[in-house]
Image (tube, rainbow, N blue to C red; front, side):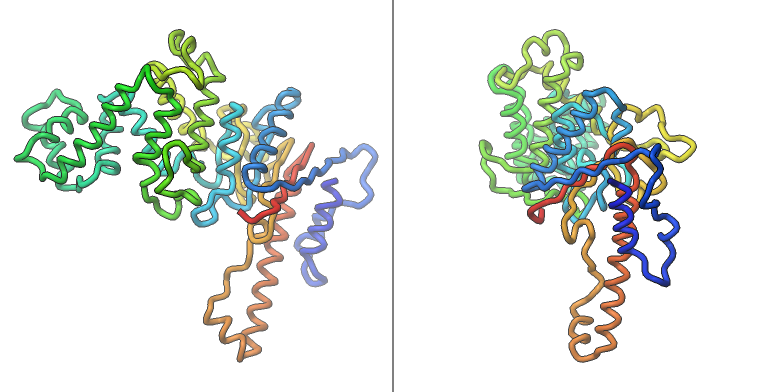
Length: 404
């Protein structure tokens, strides 16, 4: 039970001179009326297996109808380990099962740069008059268009073609030899040609095929900062055999759209299906669904407190958060993911190569490093105690067999 597990962690955290957690120790003999909170621990092969298991268990809990989605939390040590997102695969599986979620203490994978670029491409294919999407694509995706050429294209709308959308201005600029250099026109023509190609494929190719083609042609080639970059993304994948965590996510969103007929128009709903040709109505519904989910996953509301446990805005969303953000809060069911050395507990990274070399010849430096490492893992144990004691009804711990 949580009583036993939390006591083990607390005892491992304190020593004779440290009383910080001794006052929090739960009596080993609880009252008969005290609820016993069970702890379920399982091993998973990899991050996809973990995500599928956690999302399936969450769905099973919700299907019983005993609690709201907001009574469930997935708590991670942190939401970003450098370029790696520990909860990205879980978000994908929740989307695939149509379970709403909100991310606290970090950014959802739905807010990454590559996802925003993909959304802009889908929006401009569905509606070329979308100037915001066109501007994003012009600045980030069109080859050989720098700030100077971009300003020239936008300048067309000020002097000559005021009524034209930015996409139409891009079309005019692509053939204007006096405005842009040959390389800039070539890059602009290639982009406009791809958009036209995807529009013409409506009624012939499936939406899944078009999505994979967008990834192969553009998204896989996008470079991101460390804070947004997804792990193990290749740029040489073929269209029919792409392995990318973001592609998994956008296809999961497509699956969730098919499972929610009320989000589709009557025409699109009748024609929707993995093997059905894409229509403009279906693409527009998918574009709207992407924007809705991206907005909903961003927590703009206030965090729960002891006096305000359930903000109405998020009553229907599973909370994905960090241990630090979870302090002082409780949920009916809590899932702890990525229990593996160097992830949770997080490995000690405070030793430089220079310090290691000094420790080989200076015993004092070695003692200082050992003391700092011990303090680090003691703090990790305290965070483990916090995470474990957030659950009121059930605690579920996923242990990875392989390091992600």
